[in-house]
Length: 265
Image (cartoon, rainbow, N blue to C red; front, side):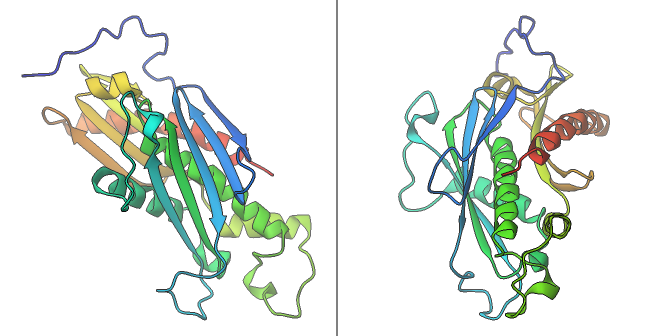
């Protein structure tokens, strides 16, 4: 039996509008950097931790860094209590964690970062659709803030300035150039859906539940794709419909990238 389609005619947001996006820097005091990302009613807290050393599987003398991410729905984030996964991420959670982590690594030049390990924890405080996409965006904002602070603190330096005797602070221009070397291209994500042959941008829960096709698009600011996840919920979709979905994602992602690039601190 096909799922019933809701009446979307009275929705205030038009088909190509993003939900309202806002962010708050340093929402928590103990994290090296944190960003509270609100996208409509979906709220993500992304906290960055800088480890004392590299992961055990990496060579001890490695000059490359690493970026890892974790994702979790808090118990009160959904309309019925979400059980904590106390023995590690499973199923959907593990799949989203891997997506967020590889998306963020797609933004980083690990050689330019140097021997630094960063973990971005994305906790969903309130879920109203698009949590994996919002986590990537919040995580990218937190990662940008983290790298800025590591450079300012002298902990992340250009390759040719890493000798023990070179402790001179970078000039403002050098610091900016190094930031662009470490993060040559930001990453953002958005969900796009096809509902009764109409393309909708940035799916909340109601739209996601109604979608015939659900597409998560992860793309860099320069227009290169990191991942595209597309599913026909109760059928198939044609190449021209896929093109329409991707075309709708581009202006939305450009707007999200402008929000991420505004992060400083």
